[in-house]
Length: 166
Image (cartoon, rainbow, N blue to C red; front, side):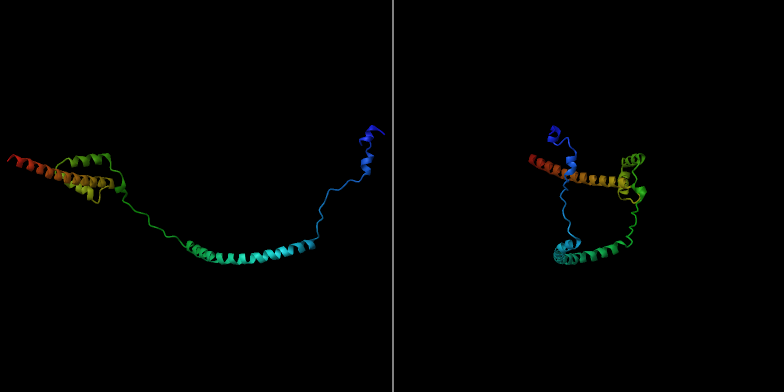
């Protein structure tokens, strides 16, 4: 024997004489037998799904009705609110020159009191100017009350001191 034949390398005819084995193939059952196996499964699945489907329909029915009502409401024309109309002249900021004139007029005695009330409560005055002079009136009121309280307190102290000397 040849060394090549000993290890199966030299003779190629030997490979051709031996039949080749086919890989394992699963046998496919016929169509009828497949339906026979699946039929009990399908019946049990239908049997278990029926109560679920019925309960799901019961729960979805009110939701579907309310959804129809809402869709009818939303198909209506929405309410158009009228735009807010403002006096744009009264919302603009007060100019530098207007502030200078206002401060000059508040320096004049007697005219200042009248003009502060006109600018605080007048109808044709810009909002920022009106708010400023309302704040001026509130601070004036606070200082007036404080001055009256201090005068009363100072008068009481003076009276107490003057009685001690007699």
